[in-house]
Image (cartoon, rainbow over all chains, first blue to last red; front, side, top):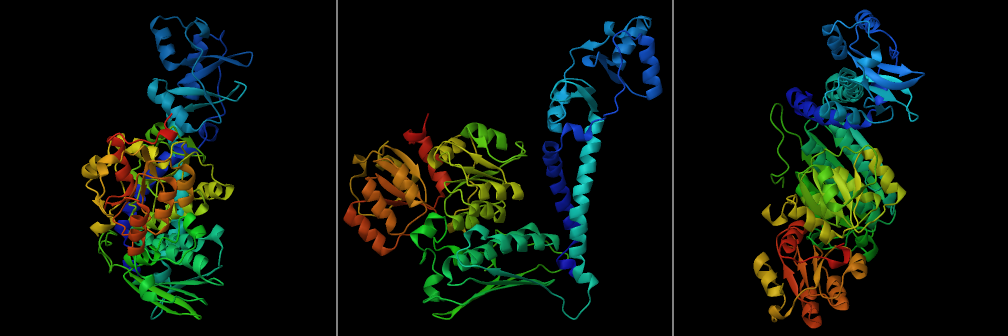
Length: 331
Length: 120
Length: 118
């Protein structure tokens, strides 16, 4: 029943696209200390390379920081060990083969910083230090990948669960005609919260599985109507959005003062807004024109002294067809 | 164009946290009238504006704008910053005015992302 | 760059009665749709780019002695605005292009905004 709201193949495509950019976002949000390994096996500069060989073998690691009195002085890796093996020099101390003054990252850096080092230098691992330069962990490319996947899954799951629940609403509840009604009271002059209701409606539609184009068209139309309630009414009004599998119907009404000349109000550029409102970027006389462009049907009724009622409909595409692009003229 | 390149051109200051500077912006739009932004901006634009009230962020959310540039060195009020953080829309401040900012981006190859209204 | 050259290069429509555009040489460009910004930021002789087309733009341009107004996105000023422009000697130009593109083209022609150029 809800196939026209949620076509499985389309949603997956959108999702994939979203997730690619989400990984990039996460690379900036996640800190090195969240994904690093903090249980670090360390070596002493005077340890014999033989000890390194045994440690690496037992712990199945391929590198370790070298500490002297708690201070990080170098990094010893499997490559260093191989050089040593070729020379049959396993009795030599670690400090002869280690890489001194290793490049480090800070625990509070975003993982992107670590990725940059991995890309520009050929290191396989980086020691992680705190703001005092003390070793707190070690990070590899694998740690980053695992960390990103974990975060992505977390992210994905919570939104996915919401989306799943929402998008199956129409399937799970049976009736002759199922609809979801969202209702918002808008206060006159409340510029601070102007747009909150439309943002919520837009988000609800996306969760219900509507395409980004539909959500955008609906969001823009409701936003213009919401701002009209804030700017032009005497005591605010109500936005009521009814979502059904085949259409979204929006009813916006107020209790005054009404529009003197509806036809004139529909003309591009006509506005009764004050200069103050214009200076806020509104009242250019484009709102109703804009709404008309975004919806499939609209009706504006008003009586001066009584109030105004604006009704709009956006039709949702029938099952298994692609959403009409917003560039095509909906009116 | 990558967001960080645009910021470089504008000598801009990023005001919000956790901004992915590698994000792509498809083109630029310069406007102070929010209805204009809503009516003719295509998704993934860089919006340049002289306004800095919270409605700019709301409008950006509705119009799927990628990032907002506040021209003439404007510092937005807290409500605007907070809303931008919550909605994940980067706010960038540039000391250039609208004219210089748009001119420089256009010169650097950032196309216009506003559909002329007459073409509809 | 003279105004007649700019009008030709950008193929602008001249909405007010023709005066000799070759005698006008803008001192720079300014773009904003907010009258308060224009009042505080535009310099004498600037070429003002805006989407606004209502009556008040003429008053602002006259007050600040601006070179001309380019109205973008094909917005049409009403008769009262045109009449007022004639009276005040304000040159109104129009184009279907969006503000961003108009600025870009003007910038290419060498029109700048000296106030904010470092």
